[in-house]
Image (cartoon, rainbow, N blue to C red):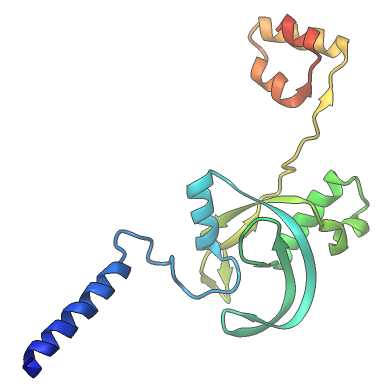
Length: 190
């Protein structure tokens, strides 16, 4: 076989291999190198699932952590869900502490102890207005909301008032069902 023909054959095989790996119409940030969750990751989760709700598996302070090529000292969160760890800045730590205070009925001092954050669910969003070193770069924010409402049974007196409010159009039946544990008798009355 001529040298020129061999070259074209090999070039054709290489193109065939390359084309199998070629991806088009994908997010240009999909294959970026990053060690920790970033705003683009949060946006992607929200696009796919509607919300970015994560459960804290571990919270810790560490020094010299490789955060996308930079050695960083700071507070870090790891999640039960299959996502990268997160660097928790001071604003997000304060927000998590306030959520922990409410959800776990703790004092402010207890809620700031990161050991008490385990098992707490937080909702992340991407805020384009976040600045770093005076430059608007966008960043992750923990939403300052209590995500999990523990469903409680509703007593008969409150149920009767809710039922009247539903009949008059002042309250929503679905809201009652989502917020309270109802007995079978109460459900049948709806």
